[in-house]
Image 1: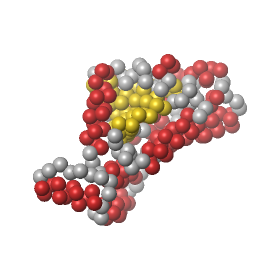
Image 2: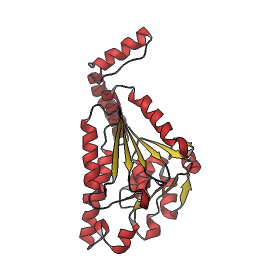
Image 3: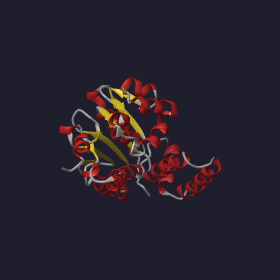
Image 4: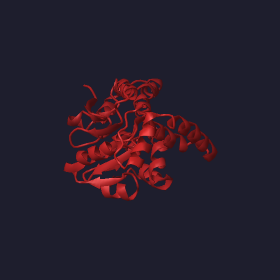
Length: 265
């Protein structure tokens, strides 16, 4: 069964994890290929300015397929090398594809985001949670470790101490705690979650697409480079932006006291 339902609403693309009957588990054979194909299509589509990632039904994603783990099938089956390759060639492919999206990504977390599901949400640039959402990285309770790079992802979102607390205890926190810890930007009633996400996406989509993509790139680079390198990247990127028609439009709109219309030129 296909994992991702893709819906285009003008400059906003909505990706819905679509295995609602089993709380949107991740890591089935082919999930990595599907995520990669979707991400590549979005990156090539200059009409797409923002992505909203959410889950169908009552969960965002319950994480890895526990039944497949129990039955030792798919990604979680075979000998040690086979399982390692299953992670590298499937789960890791899925995560790399999501991380490699060049447009801003909003995770609209509609329910539990557990284990791999939590890490997927944390790869988004912005997270909005329904008041029904829950978050946990419960790998140790299953006798495994965070096999999807979560130990790299989560400390960058909430800091080392709180990330360690969640990993070491396997605790699941509610949406209010997630907001207090900086895991999400805001918490909204469940029935207004997608309206809030669409509203935010719509505001972002009004901005020039090349500048949006380059700003995301600079944010990512800034987490891993020195300040001097970040400044050099900014100087080179800014020089390119000054030559665009969208820059001229933004300046003209400000001077003329009107709303700018950015065309990606």
